[in-house]
Image (cartoon, rainbow, N blue to C red; front, side, top):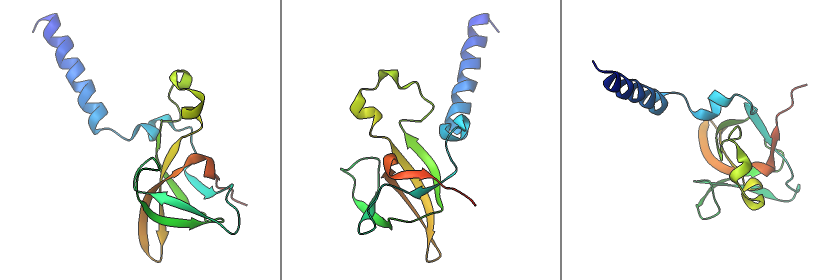
Length: 121
């Protein structure tokens, strides 16, 4: 095997590990595992969407005091170098969450600014 073939094979293995590996958010390990709704008025709800943006449909709504929202993913990933983003993009993070409602698991996306790390007393 030539040096070039080894480099190509090695890069192929790395690529497969990235594709098949854990979600990058878990690799970063600097975000909270669970969130609670924050910055939503008691008379309002937080819309949960099918994707990370307002163009995606609403799949559910969360009350202003909802808790136990598990962090699944974020865009952009919170441990990425954010220097290439403009101010608007930095203010518009989306988080994919999962929670249990009446025995069912619900999955959806919310604006990260409406979440805070869940506190445990």
